[in-house]
Image (cartoon, rainbow, N blue to C red; front, side, top):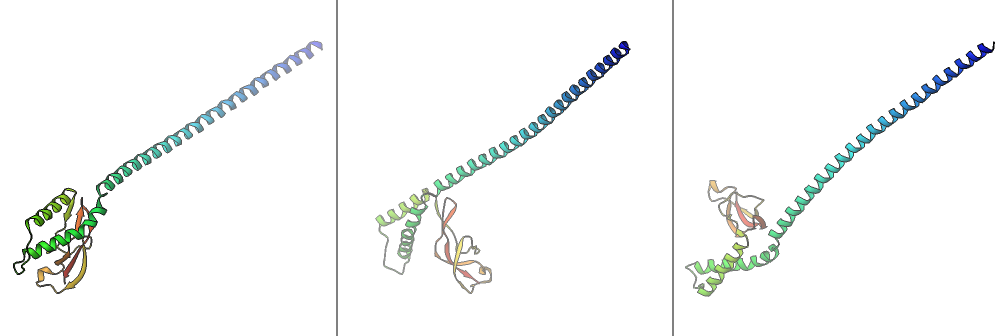
Length: 185
């Protein structure tokens, strides 16, 4: 009987050893699965972080480009306040020249005043100032400010600018003053 007890005891120990191996294998397997799950999760987080980084980088790059464009636009039109202040003087010069050119008046433009007139026009033109041509052009509310409407002298002048009361000006292709006009209807 002792042999039988010893054999039973050995079988019992072998069974326990096999169960321990299975438990260790199961623990290893579950650790491996946990590590693989963790790796998958970390890869997903890395992908999301890369995507956020690329989006943030693109947004920052767009911001830099937009800021640079705005800075260039600002530099182009920085003198607009000064030029706007000079426009009434330019209008007065134009009226005086128009009056002097009229043969019915005795007023004249002296040579010195004519030189100043030409110099102010060339200087402002060099700064990017351009007078808009309005008379005879189709009325455009983006460019013109209609002061009044009058009956058109001809059918083809309907909807067009008949007379310009105050010239409009562009500074480096940006409107700084709309032309005040009379429109035919």
